[in-house]
Length: 338
Image (cartoon, rainbow, N blue to C red; front, side, top):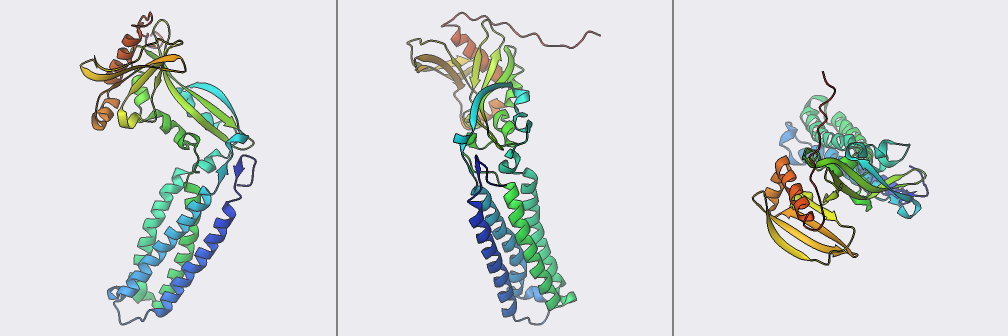
């Protein structure tokens, strides 16, 4: 990556220098320890200083290189002020394609999950390689064994640095950094929204957000997810996303004008205690419901389409106390007639 108006990579340079210094220190310490070891008679696997040096050297090189690679990536800065944000709305199924449209640096900044998996495999490999050298030292001799070990230390340091840089996501405040592959997971929450789409009064799920595009970067902020109902009039009910895994499903409907009413009470929805909140924000009232459950039961309800639909019906019933609402069950598309 270079230096662009909205992507500042100038802070990465010092971490390249630190990584080089770290490389020299790691290799020097390995060589110094190698010269200090006084090899006795085989088996060398019974000599603690030999075991510690040969096993820990490649592991340590991989970890230290990985740390410098991650710090270099996190030194990248984004200037959101240089991005022009516009509001947009998309169906849930189409939302995950936002970052794939156009040529942007987002994938690099967001990190590659494949490199993260590769980093774990490299770490495991470093332990196995160290063990292989340890048990092969008697066959090839100490000199060749330590030469192989030195080459392995050098390679694993560099590979750990590169893989970590590729794997780590950029530190950003933009919607907790749902860059690239993270964006759909951030919204979908383990397929909860797909289950909610099955509800008889939910016609679709839409995502409203702000997208900012610069010369080379695309970023998304201010994400809100809504269930569009099949009622008359049509309602857009917001689904709380960020706290869903802790409090379970929570639905909010914003009215166009204030009601002058405030209350916070427990009501019954399909046999479950449910929090009902009626309040005002900026002269506009909202009505909100969520089940009164501990975290474990709340998460269990997220996987239950009926509970999600019951709560949606419960909110519509509460809204109908303040405005005229008619439930019209959606008509499922059964496909062309045979």
